[in-house]
Length: 372
Image (cartoon, rainbow, N blue to C red; front, top):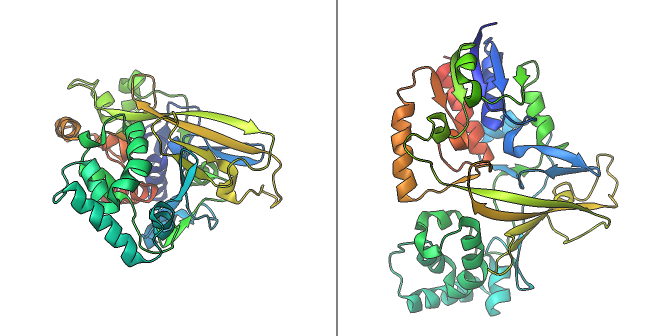
């Protein structure tokens, strides 16, 4: 059988593109080297709890069109992300807000908090931030940087904050209000029944082959379709011919606990340098501690997350967007543009950090362009 499109990767980008192509009357084959669909948003029921097997994924967007699109495939609950920071047993609100400033300095008004940050910025002598450390101190002052940013960030990226670009921290929300909503997005929640069920609905009626490694059998698979939509690592596609791009990877230690409540929150970040994990996720709180029947669950499932430098055999998670890797990606992108039959998309195909709504918007845009 000849297909119009071979979609490599059954994650969000691949599933959305495949859905759009199939709805346009195209013959589509989706393959994935993993034994499951949904990529890194894959969820699996454990003790009645939807466990995010590749780390916490909270859907949030201000894009009304994307929100309308995902609701075709899932009902979303009202979960709001309000993580907590743990620094040697001291607990602070995230995002950085008036609760954080009060706990850190005892200030009670926004004016007092702003004055404290301005004082510490002046003392640090920062005018134009040149790296992540200087950008963080400019945003929230030295005390918060030292306790809540420095150790966590260095664990997350495996690099000194002075060696990381300033723009990484610019996404960090800082509010002079008592608002614990981390994303502050118009639309936010978790799909009821988990992300895997949502992606399965996207792929309904579309042929999917799992445990299929595209790069291991590229010529034969390419011959099946007129065009290829590739969502794997762009450097791997070209056999790392220009050298490997750098990624950060994440390792998870997940365990079932015979107790109803471990930490009282979905996410607790451990911001000191001494604790080896970056955060602990307690999955049941993404669905308010309730099972599918709405009843309280007697057990809980937690995952400790450990960040590490990617090496062959690991799952690549986060592109390391420094100058060196940016230049290397541009060289790979130039090669990709010469591939007439192949379109590169998604977090790995474009070597770009994407939130879920951005992945979906990108896939919809790609489909619209190709399916005209």
